[in-house]
Image (cartoon, rainbow over all chains, first blue to last red; front, side, top):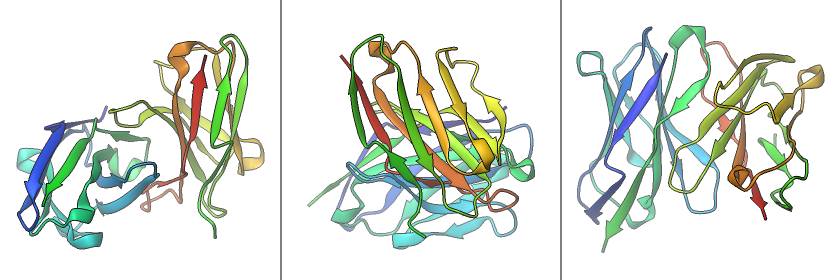
Length: 114
Length: 114
């Protein structure tokens, strides 16, 4: 079975500062990993995904994440926060090539201070 | 391609009534997922389909919930004898399947049970 733990339900950073949102996963098979963003009153939008190959993946809006198998982590980063990054972020996992259901974490709300 | 479409966007119903939601996935996507999301939480997996076959249903899901995907195109989610605890956002998502497992989400149907 797969599961996801997002550390920190709320993260606040200053505009221009580094954004780091933490995600740890559990999976009995090689996982596929995802980060989604949800802006207020909008649907979920895919930021980036890891399936196989390069462990550092780049996504939209300047975000990137690194798959670290030894740490079972898939943390999301952005070098410089922008006010428009304020949103809810969800990490998700599926059971790799068997392509099963996608399981989501509880989310991290990112706030940006001017 | 207009993306995943969900109807209605909002539904208010009295406790004990039955409700049905519809999801139209992206046309070439053979996987379709239903999730439930409450305030401050991540999407909770309900069920998913591969074409017309329902592959898995959450064990947490009451027997009052049923989903169908006739002909492998649109899907319906029915809740019978609604309870106040059913109040939530119901999300539908679709994906191509195979290695392209990222799910594309609709805007959701917000259910309020009064």
